[in-house]
Length: 139
Image (cartoon, rainbow, N blue to C red; front, side, top):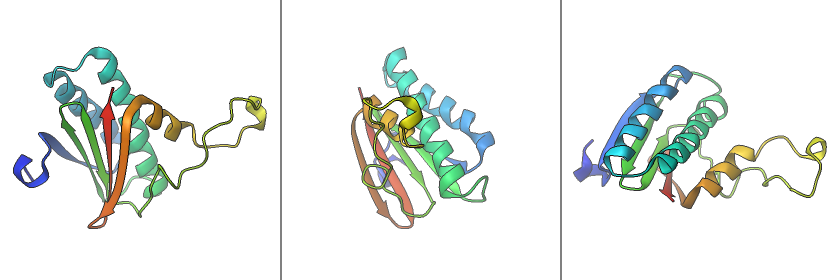
C-alpha cells in the first residue's frame, strides 16, 4: 500500500508479535523526526504506540500471532491498525483511574488508555474491513 491508497505518508506492516514492538517504535520515531516533530512529541508518540502494540498483541490476539499490525505517520498524526477483534478503546475501555481513590482501591486496567487519550490531542477510532484503526493527533 502507498500514500495514494491509504492517505498516509509513512506506513509499514509489522507482525503482531512482541519482538516487533521495538522495530515499529523505531520506524514511527524516524518518520516523526523526518516530519519535523520535536523530541518531546516523538517520545509521547512512542509511549502511545508501545501501549497500542502491547495491548493489541497481548489482549486482542492473546499473545504473539500470525496476524499483522500497521503503523503509519502522516505529519503529526499517528495511525495504528490491527486485525484483532473489534475494540474501541475510546468507548469500550475501562474507566479512567479515579485520582480521589487510594492506589489500592483503584480498579486494575485503564491506565494505558488514559495515557493514550492524554498524550494525543485528538483520538479517533473506527472498525472497517476486519481492522481496528486508531488515529491520534499528536500535540
